[in-house]
Length: 598
Image 1 (spheres, helix red, strand yellow):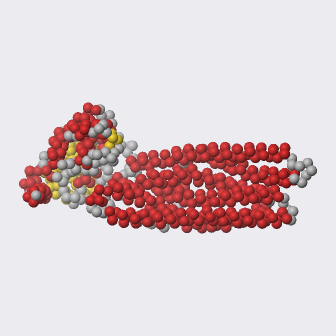
Image 2: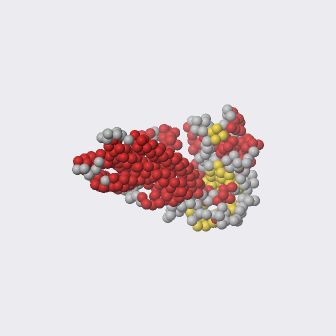
Image 3: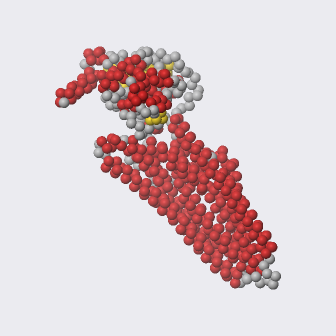
């Protein structure tokens, strides 16, 4: 398992600067929502002062011969009703605005991440866990959305309430105000210390959550292999290691988060006691009346309540900071180069391909393809064979421009592919890979993936050639059968569908990377016959380990350690008696031995 440096200090400013730049277009409505929140808070702050007036009015009336002035009491009561009603309306409207904005931001973030994936080079996706990328789309984006919805409003209302309470308390009685403020300073100091110590654990929590998602995705995808090789214990141990790391980081982050609330509650209660004691002393000396104490008792509760909210917001913002860093780190990854200036377009392709002194390595200093050169005539069937790691699939990656060559050039119809847009190159090739890939959708939708405008006749004809039409028609819904995890389709049948998909696309050139590796011998012969019809007049690149499938190739390139060590057709290579003959005979001698033993 890859280890991470969780002690690396976090840059709060950069994370939130990236987030604020992203939501800049929504700032107008966010500001309106915040103004409404502040207005609602201010109205709430006016209430206690009116309650104090009401208390004084009632207290004075109790000792007057005329009794309590109920008209004045009613006037204050109606004013309080209007004040609190407006406060509720303002709070509701700002909550509606913030919920709408945050959901739109979350939706846009997910959309931008999805678009970003399509603009990233294959090198990035090959070097990062799929589960970690998925975690950024789901967990991290949800964390940001929830934080914007709750924390921003809570932060503003809490600060407004805090500042408003201070102002109102100072106006009401500055001595009692200073007593309350002095008691809470301790809480702010402690909160700052805790935040500085806990941030690294929130960062680590998000990172290990991504790792855990990657581990789960990996184990689930390869569940059959894990079972077959009795790897349950190893997988469980690896999972427990990552899960324990997540537990440790989550526990520590939540522990520090949990300290905030009781700490602020203690500070609030301590402030309440201080205000009561100071108020009693001042009242006994005749410096304040009873209404001031009543007002302050309400104010101190309003004053300490935002302290707890600020503590919670501080915790949430730390998670938001960590999530923002991961999301915008992904969105900031280097993309494929801009090709808008490339005007060359290949349409009527003959299929001439040339590799000219191509050198390439996935990592700097580790060259896989060494000064590779070969000329391929239009319509030729080119087979690429060799041991594992020889560079066969790498050649296809370079031909499709999934990776860029380090030096040299690849030409199609004498045009360097570096002058063509990737979309143009990809339209020139139909591909059938060793790993079958079908998305959740109908069989017809899967077959039309490379050619959305294909009609039913084209699709069915391609399936007949691929030998999969009969199988499709035996399914309950035929071509409208939805493919999903629960659908009973074998690996070989999925491979046949991918072959039919390539036939539907009808591209001028083909790439077959171990296209028949997942089917039985009889099906392989049927596919081979279909492929012979499909490849007529098309330049075809075939990567194969089963050498019996490429005996009719026009040119066989034998690769070893990134170099072409032999080339020719099957007969000429067998006559040479070199590495190809050794590979060919080793396959058939092993099959013969198995038959004899049986």
